[in-house]
Image 1: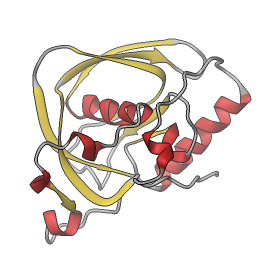
Image 2 (image 1 turned 90 degrees about the horizontal axis):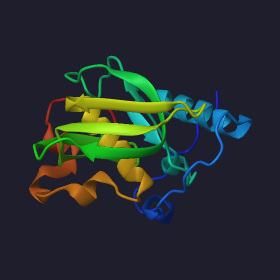
Image 3 (image 1 turned 90 degrees about the vertical axis):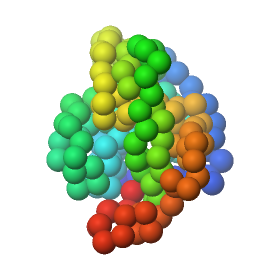
Image 4 (image 1 turned 120 degrees about the vertical axis):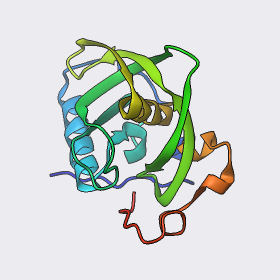
Length: 177
């Protein structure tokens, strides 16, 4: 098990745009994905982007079954998405609470496209092309933002809806992101 340190907001590496992956099905890529999965699961996350562990490549993983951080969220299949491209399918925007492993202890109300199409590749270079909505769409957009140096607080429209978990949700136990 290779749990990596997750960079926190303020680390300059999180603001950088990541480079595309040029070669698939390599030992290095497979090891990166093992490390990312181990780290995401150890921290009870819904997703993780390579830049969050200091690797400047356009690689994200995400997936969620039952998670105490998101008790009302629908399941999202565990997915490896490399060199992603997101297309919003309409103008509908939904706002909901988000947290982030790189912004521990905080939550914010973030606007996201309600329905998207995402395309990219898996670790073997096979093409992925899915249309999703709801929490699945939110997770994909959140993780892919990391590849462009964007953290969710940069998308918050109303800073009165951004704060520490225990202040925003008194009496509700929310694990540290």
